Image (cartoon, rainbow, N blue to C red; front, side, top):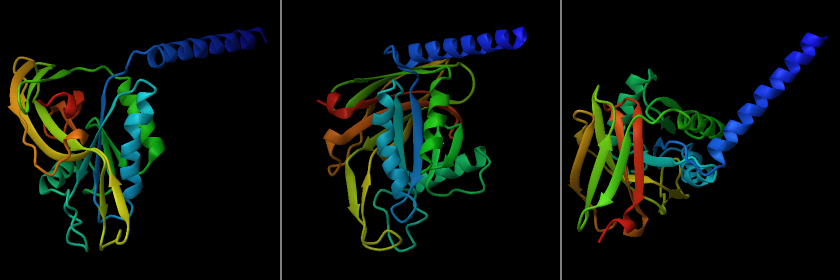
Length: 257
């Protein structure tokens, strides 16, 4: 009986310590590491709108808990021949998803699919799985640091530091929020779809050499992109479909002159 009582006290003590540490991490105002959440989606896919809505909410919902979510909405093009052409789609984004399918041992690309930090994938409209995976990734050590700063008219200075081993790619994405489309045909015909963090441009700006990169890059902004809704996202990724080691995101309204 004494042993059982002592064990119960020990369990309660361990739980109390865990809760205290969790509170210190999430409530004391110290943000956890930034987590990149990629959604592969399409306006032609009837199961994608809930995933698009989820992607739009994750950043705001988890920021209140000191978790920085960096969403990236990649619209793939393999739905385009099935009744509706997605105006945000790109073959380049489909290729990115195909590389993930191979790296993460998925039986081919599908929509909606979420990939968190380049390491974990699951069905993109699974809100519970999304939050638990983001929390798990946020608690891991950030092995690369990224800084973004303005550098004159429509230019950014990017600084990245990280491990001096492997194929560490430094990627730049431009995203746009508050987009909508009235779909005229296909599985979502007659619906108005709303999108957040739509990737407008994705490109590699360099690689880490001796664990560091500092570069100035010009922004390639189209006239129909709403500048007030644009963000620049820079992340360090271990190869084109490997783990994302660190990331940063800034609104371009604060950067452009």
